[in-house]
Length: 230
Image (cartoon, rainbow, N blue to C red):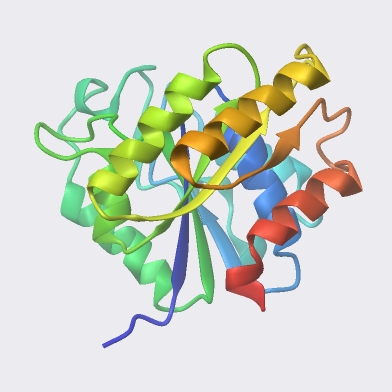
């Protein structure tokens, strides 16, 4: 049986690469559609309504999170320690995470899931973020840095995804400080595409006001979402 929902799983090549900003842009690009946002495991947070990733989206999406959700509704496992889920507190129930995502996918057309860190971040002693993406039959979108080091990190992430046979939507690179020269951005993008055969859909630069992102950034994201919206 085909599950009615479609899951877009946003992962990173590292921590703090811009997954939450990319999630915000994806949700903005899906405005008017039956799409919800989840952060199944939130680490480094003690108050979901104040300092969580869903709280960031809630502040900057027009009208807040969709479907009447509040930040706490987006989180299944909240951990105050800024560590990989495996080490951030009591054991995480992997099956409960899967059911949390699948439950939303059963009643919404699109579910945007923001992972914690990269694809091989351990959730339990034998399950990673990539296992969660696979278990929920997600299409994975990779957020990477625009600058030095991104070629290696992004190619390794793509390789891990391909080895497990997961669906991959390609990557978006982020440069929140506009610190990377345009030539370097272009070279990094070209190298990643050349060696992986996957698309780097664009580079998201500085966003002065997350509530009003650059239309060019939104257009970049809308293009990569076309398999979900056409």
